[in-house]
Image 1: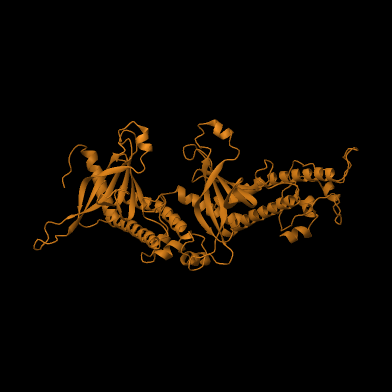
Image 2: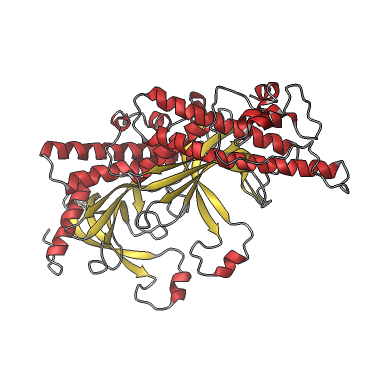
Length: 563
């Protein structure tokens, strides 16, 4: 593209600057060589078959060779600086003029039902072409020190807008920005992350999304590891991902206005949401993936995709790698072969989070809607299959010490969410969690009780339940008094039960805040409510019993349970 720009140096003034009259175009001879110190490429743009609408409002551009300078001005750097400032103003105006066309192309291609995919591809190709042209222009100016891309400079031109899309179905407005070159994620702090695009996502009504959220396309360079997990002599691999800005400082609550006044540049973390791969996507491709990400995060009631129907319960490694969108075969091979690269853990965490909307759909649809019995069974079997597959997947990673299931480690992955159910008739919301393996009931105290599932039960209004209550599926091994034998070792019997967490330490009724501050890990007792027998129930069966228990407690608040 740079070669084409150089070969057509006379095109920019005569075609691409809106508002120029025919007289101005005629005054630029074809063989004129710029003598004003401006970059030659600033006088040209590639044709590429683009037709630019002429603006009705004419933009006044003073020719560098005109005699408008005062007699006392000396030629040289002062004149070159003034000429550069004029052309930077022209460039800024030109970028602003392009924004309505970006808005039209992006909105038409992404929100309207076109007659064919070819039309959509043509519109997005035109948008991509405009983006590349503007990016080349800004980089050309920056290479001649006519403007700066440094974000610490308030007058920088590090990025520009390439369209705004209104998603009525999600009640969201998405504004897209393109960085002219990879920029540090934080302007004054080296995080190893470099941003290439930004999306400002704003709710169309305050009830849906009260503030703007920021998403980025970033990359980071990670070491290239060999099959033994050691760093190889070759260069690292560049991995691209889409993530969200997580505000760190000052506090987002804005309770202390001085924190904001004294903060020069806000700080934030990069929360990865979607891995894109090793190759940089185009601006249109990245926006496509961003919109798909927003749809999957906002619409939690859509039908699970066919991809999950093809999951193999016996091939968890293939599932973890192949179902992540945008991963090339080379990346998949590296994820399998490297033992300590860290990519595996990030992949499984991302995939586990991506499964939650499907768990929500299956559990809510099966348990709250009137369905035929066979359909109810199919949904529950599908939910159970997903749960078992994820459990095997995490256990396979833990077996190679890529992650830990120890709850005393803050970065553990001992459990995962398997669905949320809204019980309107009970005014309750139930969120279910599955522990990957039997886990001690208390992380640092041996109680002999091991938990397998947890349910967080929260009231939908202040009158029903003032706070979240926690219920567990646990087992304990008790002496078996009825085994056959001559008084030898009678063995033990494993008994399963559902019970409730009862806060012990710190005292839930204490008014001393220091009791909570000085408590490292809270402790609680296990109050048994329902015995399940000696056989471990499946996650779906256990949730069925928990919902029946909640229904019984709601109908008979003080009545004891009969087992």
